[in-house]
Length: 291
Image (cartoon, rainbow, N blue to C red; front, side, top):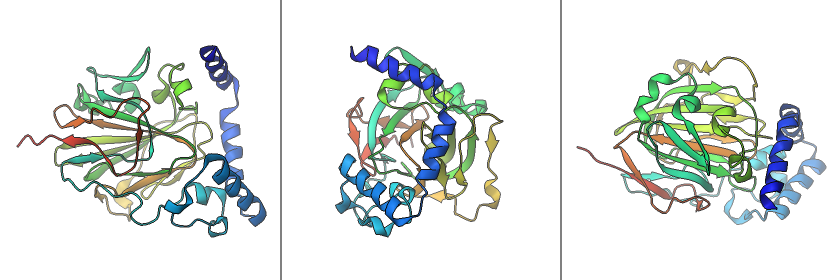
């Protein structure tokens, strides 16, 4: 019965005007009228049992809009960053969708579904071979999660590419029923260089995700069609050398991040199993020192 219910919910997404709905959510989340935005924030805190003790500002009046609250900062030391120099830390608070080794060029999505590195990275075909038989982790951010994304390890931001796409939900039910889900949805791909070689972190857009923001790109609104665009980082005023735990950006509503690591560069934790919970800053793997 549950499977039938999930298939119905997923089927509805195929006919839902996803961009129109997402645009409406974008506007509602940015209402600044005090009575409206305070009500939205209070209702959200109550409905999702948000722990206000761990956020920097706990009163609705401290935020200019619901979106400002949704992309909230945490209080100091709420998420300590694992200090081991070889550790890879979770870039987000969330639930593990899948993690482990990449099978040649195929990543596991959900039972019965895989997708290729080529499809995920779109035009970045020169980067495909880098990640063959490497490691990956896919982490889902529910609406109630903290929604800032942080660097899983030290690195230098080499490239930033926006890939237009659709806006399916990225929850477990959809991942288990829509083939190529993460390669179909809109995404922002961050390519880094590090001491152990390159790595990539992908922001995957989703239904009701009004935008994806980074310090280098500003706010990027969903775009269903068009070419893959590479952002000109040469004009960026924000440093591109990134320390582990540094802020990379944020989602405006729930979504997913994917980490890609080359073969032989790292090992993911055996505790990183589907449906396990992770917290930003906690170790989820370790770098392999081949020197």
